[in-house]
Length: 171
Image 1 (cartoon, rainbow, N blue to C red):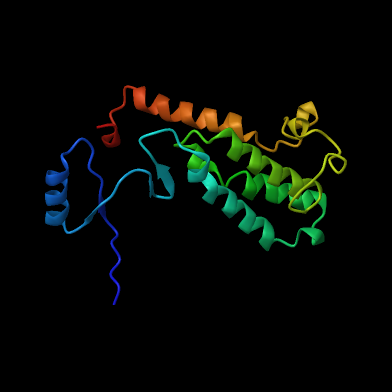
Image 2: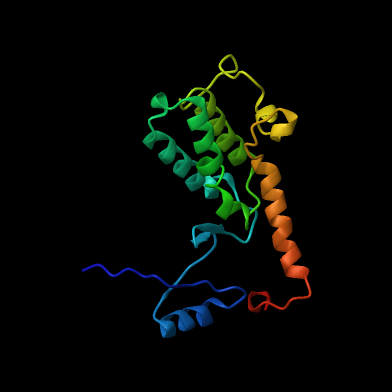
């Protein structure tokens, strides 16, 4: 029978001998960065593109499961705004997502919206993606700009950190 270790010990600034002793006393194994916690990549350095690849694969999983050829553009717009734009929210609220990942996600959202396929060329796009992301009163369709949303969510997190409230997670 195979045992699964759910808890790992991640020593930070602890000598190796002491870390091994603590891990064995807790009955767990030593771990190191990078690792995943609650689905988010944790690292002592800047998050790389490879750490965010599960985000792209989850986007691909949703798109492949939908029968896009049976949907009109309004149906694809609804799925784009409600599902594909919401997938990276968990990441964006805590991690500065690399621009490469944002571009890859945008290319998938754009292709799904315009054609329902995995890839889309410029001739299939009737309007520039930046225009589609604009508010409705400016001629857009309100598909969220992921880069802007990522910055706003991170600023919201920083604001919570420096407010006068004293939540327990701050300690």
